[in-house]
Amino acid sequence: MPDAQAAVPVNDRGFMYGDGLFETLRVVNGRPFRAAEHLDRLARGADFLKIKSPFTPDELKAFAGQIIEKNQMRDAILRVVLTRGPGERGYTPHASGRPTVAMTLHPAPPLDPPAQWKLVTSSYRVPAPDPLAAFKTLNKLAHIMARIEAVERGGDEALLLNTDGEVVEAASGNVFWISRNRVCTVPDKCGALPGITRAVVLEICSASGLQTNQRIIKPEALQQAEGIFVTQSVFGVVPVIALDGKPVARSPLVAQLRLAYSERLCRP
Image (cartoon, rainbow, N blue to C red; front, side, top):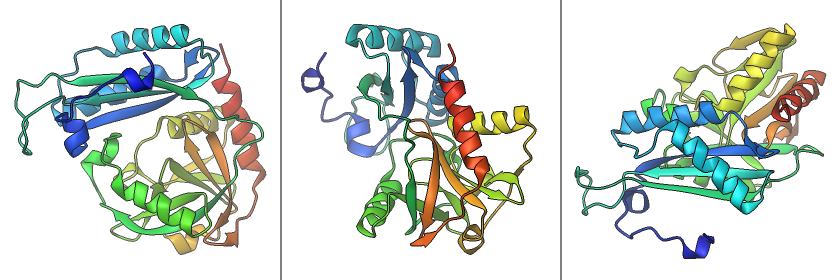
């Protein structure tokens, strides 16, 4: 149905408290990329939050195929939302509520030419470590405020640090950097989301014989990287051209990984 006709009760806990989860998938040639991994993470998040999803991952995948077919949108962005559903006022959930599930399709931005982002280090911090960081919960206020701050300072995307002052992630994706020809990213324990696109890039590195390293890094050390990029489902591999107003070195490995990711994305 059209967005304007869809309705969620005002007492839905996703609306009232951000009590729920979401996943964002890139649809290419009618196929949601890495749907199994995205929907598995959604299911694991639901188990963690003790939300009893009314549908299995396989059923959600079938619904995704239907909405793509009915809308004739073979290249799109698919968003899946799961909330605890309607409930009484108050933090304590009651077992009587039926979870809410919604799927929406959105126009996909072009992958070529690739986006190039200017990162701005945010003053907002995320906890380290945080068990909730393993899932895409509907509570993203720190990331929203960080993005607002970055845009106000002339950037495209925010770089978030944790409460220990370590680099964690971008507002909408995982951060990678090149150091001594190694492809580096932060370990999950820092408070970063274990991204699906991040995992694909690490797979590509393994298959290509590129050395990788997962380690903690401070923002001042990131400034010295031979290249920086962000990974996320909508744009794939996004080269970073500036960090806090300073130009970032351009490693050819970033372009190599972007091309390899695009090729995987478009495989039948």
